[in-house]
Length: 173
Image (cartoon, rainbow, N blue to C red; front, side, top):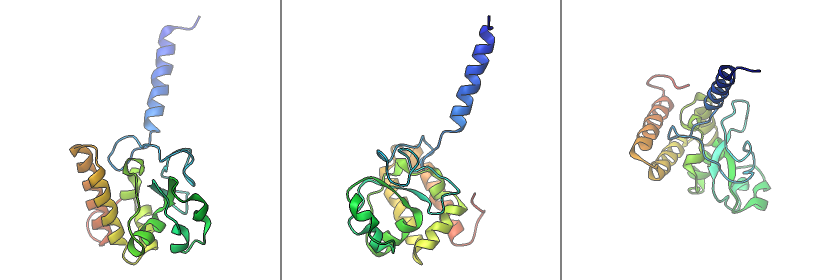
């Protein structure tokens, strides 16, 4: 017969490993789903994956017509108009600085979108006005913040990314 203590220990270890694997959003809260099978995401989420060269971490709640063509990717997106989609950070930067804003679901954006060197490089790839794209994302997400604490976490990340984008301040991840 197995000891109850062994069972409790195993349960604690399982919970600890699950908690450490949990992805967080730009508010420092659990990452929310982007939608059912939102394109290049992982499952129903736009999780951060350093190996994802396209950086598909921006959850858009309604993919606009002509999105991919306007970002130099051909017309692949036309069959997905109006759907939730995990788009590339660089494509987000390109679209918002050249074509207009996008309906972003901020609680479905991984925290790394606003706090990693990888993401900053992707913003830069998308537009020579990439700082405008960062500002647009930060303003959009501030308006969607579910609490003052969440807005404070977001504000800190946005400040750090903006500072790194200008080439000053402490390095980001």
